[in-house]
Length: 351
Image 1 (cartoon, helix red, strand yellow):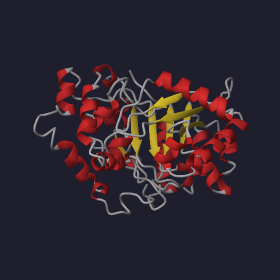
Image 2 (tube, rainbow, N blue to C red):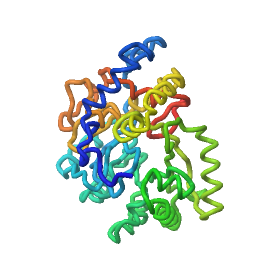
Image 3 (cartoon, rainbow, N blue to C red):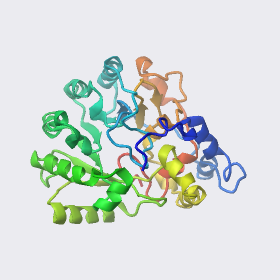
Image 4 (tube, rainbow, N blue to C red):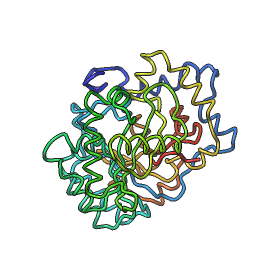
């Protein structure tokens, strides 16, 4: 597994235009498969429009201590994009006046932003209902300065959502790197020790599963039961919920699909699993994504394809909820990933 991002390797897929070319050409250009726009027109769901804003998802930087095989952010230690305190301040102003009840901090490893703790402290004063930090777990064990993160999260009642590809060492390390499983287990124990994930605890600890290959996730409830049984029996670890997320054909996962000659088969699988019920609740309809430099996107995946919102308001500094609500959501073929089967979002299944 590479220790560098696509960007650092000068891979042509680090160019978002190249990714969009692949997603628009070939089997979609010649009509072998219907484009996502055509598909949702068939079910009278075009154009996709936002509903009430509920979640503000803020990416505070692409720097990460891991280089995971399927990372759609193309994050890693070599990525230097980091949100400044000035942009964080602009986000805080928006959080104060927005109708959104959930603040969702992501990365990279969000904890590696030097202003991360300041941002969490300031944001927690505003009184958000659900305050999420998406942690890769290993960051807690990566360096002594991060060892107290479980206590810090507890102090601010942060809802921890953590990546955990599998309950076995082999599958986890294959996707995330050697030693990741053992560090993740230790981090989960550290979180359990301060009360996170315990059956009657209000300190929420949820795990995120995404498949390790070119296939769709299985049933979320069945996977959750398997994860809970294995982690409890093998390591005496507790957590609340498991979110099963479909890998979207962008960035490093797209690179993997092409390299393994699975791209067309995977797109067929996504299109065949299309579920119009999932379209009703895709995350772009109730979420707004903010990049490390303050630009606005319909979702985290559009952010990684550099598809900014179709609105006069495109930056957090000029935020206007009324104008943003009156927009069409930008779509492309990667959107099939969020509408396959029971659907997929950062909060798990949607249908």
